[in-house]
Image (cartoon, rainbow, N blue to C red; front, side, top):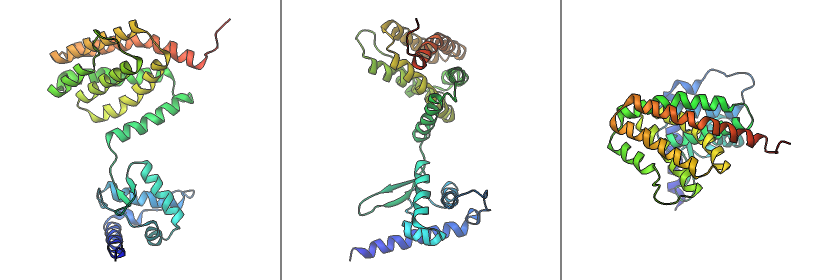
Length: 272
């Protein structure tokens, strides 16, 4: 008796897929490059149906077997296509009585974490240099501080204030790391530009991780907190020039520290 609802769910999922394919021109997509693999072709068709809304958020996809029959490919091809879509945050697989593969939408956090992983990998492989990371951070964060002073709302100010450590009590490295990350996350959110936020945080995270590993002392941490206070005070006043200048001075101070720890990380052996 329990198999009947499952069959009905599968029929509904298949009907939804067929309506999407029939109603969206990407179902008859032009052939790709000769080297294109079958799973990439299937993934691209499904991806376009999701992005155009032909397949809705929360909608269940048919099973691998049904998809394979519908697209005229093997189950292994469908499985690889679904893995590709899952890596892009476009589908999610669940288990249990209501298990299956469901359409979803990537969040800003997901996009940022994916970009962070790739930026970190490129930096480790030396395909991205420290100077490029520093340049990108300045290009993004200095104007973002100006925008934050212009657009901030009460909630932004509360988050910025909460992210600045209280010097009246001691802080461990992990706590300072979280506070530092929280400040820059709050500042980017206050800029009111989600794309700036997605672009800035992965660059910041790669640089911040290198500093955290270096074990910089309390004096350095106090200067960082003082800089964050100066930036926040300018944002509170709505002083766009002041916020921009304070952020520029903050990044100027950080640059030699980044260069030192970056060099040590790549050449740890002491020189004689």
